Every structure is written in structure tokens, then in C-alpha cells.
Amino acid sequence: MFLRPFARRLLFGLVVLVVTLFPVGPNLRARARQQQRKLTSLQLGRAQDMLASVHAGVKKNYYDPKYHGLDVDARYKEFLERLKHAPTLGEAFRTIAAFLSGLNDSHTFFIPPRRGYRFDYGYRMQMVGDRCMITGVRPGSDAEKKLHPGDQVVSLGKFAVNRGDLWQLEYYLNSLAPMPATDFSLRDPAGNLRSEQVVTKYINVGHMKDMTIEGGLSGYWQLIMEEEQEEHLLRNRYVEAGDLMIWQLPMFIDDENAMADMFAKARKHKSLILDLRGNPGGDVTALEFMLGSVFDHDVKIATQVMRKDQKDLIAKSRKGNAFTGQLIVLVDSRSASASELFARVVQLEHRGTVVGDLSSGSVMESQVFPYQIGMEDLGGFDLDAMARSQGGVNLPQDQQGGYGTIVFYAASITRADLIMQDGKSLEKVGVTPDVMALPTAADLAAGRDPVLAKAAELADAKLDPAAAGKMFPFEWAPQ
Picture 1 (cartoon, one colour):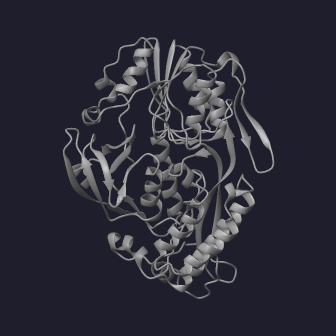
Picture 2 (cartoon, one colour; picture 1 turned 180 degrees about the horizontal axis):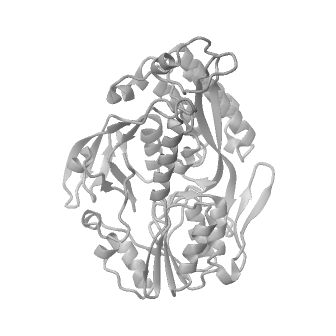
Picture 3 (tube, helix red, strand yellow; picture 1 turned 120 degrees about the vertical axis):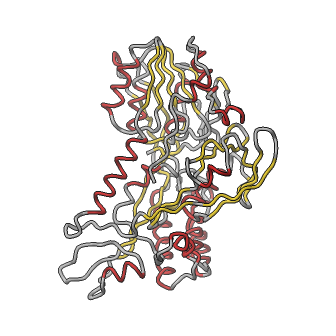
């Protein structure tokens, strides 16, 4: 799988039966702060078990047996000692994450246990060239009152914001240490500086997932609904206009029928604009199918450099079912992993034109390794009381009449580096577009999309930037 750390589908398989390690109170904002309570001996022991599992996973599965020169055993001992001094659960999770960060690998990271609540900051931001920009705010949120598309984020809290560190900052805020409020230093399109504090919204999603027949499988059906909502947000969107088709692909998903249907539509047109902006990557099978659908011959994607051997990754041509017209690929700073591989193969094979911003440079092949702690026999303990005090999952009774409490977590670990046909890796480098095209602060403020308009111009089509900006409006996930 080629995927950025924060893509939601990466985490979906870990949602089932997840519990948190910290107590749950009635107030959601207070609940978020409970990660800062003093670490209990039980929590410390579980955190140490997590670190041990992650360390063993890296030792066994990381693609580079030399770990880039890092002494992972010595580092494990160092961070095991640090855990003993972690004052809070949040700090314990950050310590485990920091252990893996020593590899400086975009696809190797810690996935902590899921919380009993969701949080919504209410804004989107990303790098546009060398500046971090607000690109959207959720209607009705506190962010809508204080932030505006086109604002430049000069700093967020105590952190300066730049291209190299933004993904780590987002990982910190979204996975390790959700903030009740975020403090911004901003520059508006006119160049004026101001400060704002944006309050985070917390949404209760239920601390426990009831997966029992007796409980009506309520947790199961909730997860099904969440998956359906996610699939809607990740659907293909397209516009057909004369000789041109514009296809927005939000993620590489292994759905051969859906991809084949889209290419059947594309073959009716002379030109195809494939919009991979914001695409975090996805499934390698989908990448192979997509590339095989734009080449009339088999093409090498990259060489997988694994722990013990190497293997060429080949996309098989779909021959008569391949699109052979003009191909234009759009990328931006959030285009990652499989989307970067697609764009770079198109460049190296001189198959089409890549337009937009420098991509993220997050190109490795990884696998998510799930772990669990628990299934302790709770004997005659009342499950609901246990859930209220410690966090739990409503599991069926075992043969002895006891219940089990399970904590789920995971680690994404890189299984292979990917070397392109030019002998280079895209990791920490990214794809430089053939045609650089960036929205200005004024474009973002007005909702214009000059990048898509430029791509249409290359396809001999006229598209007004304002109309282009309304073609695929951003859709917020339901709260």
C-alpha cells in the first residue's frame, strides 16, 4: 500500500472494537484534556508493551536491515526509559511516536488507540509553493468566523509552518495531541498580520462499540454507516465537455469496475485531465490498473527495494481499452505516494504533462501492522462500570462468564523503497511539475482555480478560473 499517514482509509480497519486507555468523563472538552492526567501504572505498562511491539515490528519488517545507520535497539532502550518518566498518557503516545520518527520515513509511524470522540478543527490548510495557506473553513464552525481562504499561516501556536515540517505538525495535532484550541498568526491577502484563536469542536462517537447480537450490533451498523459516508467522499467525480474530460480522483482505490468505467468515458474524448491534487495515494493494484489504462504497452513503475531482494513493479497495458489521447495530470503539495508515482511515470515515459505544485515527496511502500493489548479475564466485574472507569469494548461473554477488554493500536512500517527508472527515489524529493501553476491568495479567497483553468488551456479548451473553482467543490465529512 502506498499511502500518506493521515488518509482515513488507512485507519478504517483499525476502528472495529477500538478502546481508549484513558477514563471518559461526561464533558467532551474535559475528556480531551484527560490525556493530560497523571499516567497510571496500568497505562504505563500498556504503553511499554506498545513500544515493545512497535520495536519488534520494525526489527522484523523494516525494509532497510541497517535502519539508515540508526541503532534501533539502543534507541528502544532509551525510549523505554523515557516512558518511565512520561507524566501523561498523551506524552507516552508522543514518546512511542518519537521512537519511530528517528527513521525519518514518511510511511513509518505510530497509530495510537482510537478515542471515544472525534474532533474537528474546522479548517483546511496546505502548502502552496513555499507558503502555508488556509484553503477552506467548515460552515458554522468557529474557524469560519476567524479564518478565511487565502490567509497565510505564518505560525500555528509555537510552531513555524513550512513545507518540510507541516506533515509532522498535522500528525501531532490530528493523531497524538488534539488541541482544544489552536492559535494562529496570519497574513491576509492584503499583507496585514493578525492573530486568531480557533476553538475545536468535539463530537461524541461513543466510547464503546457494541458488537454483540444482544446489543443489536449497534457498533457494527455505526461502522457501516461511517464507511458508506467515507466511500461517498472518495467517489470519482468528472465533467465531460466536448473533446475534454476532467476526472477528479481523490484516492487510488482497488475498484476495477469503477476505474474501467471511467476510462471508457475518457476514450470518447481527445484529452483527459486527471486531477490528483490532494490524492494521498492508496492501493498498488489500483495504481497498476490506472497506469495500464494510459499506456499501449507494459510500463515499469519502479523497482521495489526490499529487505532481502528487489523486484520490478510493472503496470500491464490494457491495450485496446487504454486511453491514448492527450493526458494532463494535476498535482499539488498534498499529492502523495501512488499519485506521485503515477505523475512521475507519466513524465519519465513522456506520456503527458504534469501541471501544478511540487508534490509531497512521500513515496515508500508500507504495511499497517495491527496490535492489541488485553483480553484480560474480568471475572465478575460489571462491564458498563469498567467501560466508564477505564474504557472498553462490549464483547460477548466467554465460556467462563467473563468479559474481555482489548486495546487496539498499530504501526505503519515501510516494506520497500521505490526507485524510479531514472535511478532516483521520490522520497523527500517529490515530483516537480512540467508546468508550475499555483493559486494566489486572492484566488483562494475568491474560490478560483487557475490551475485547472491552465490545464484546460493546454488541452485547447477555455475554462474560466472562477467556473473551474466551482466544478468540484470541497465536501466536508458529516459530523
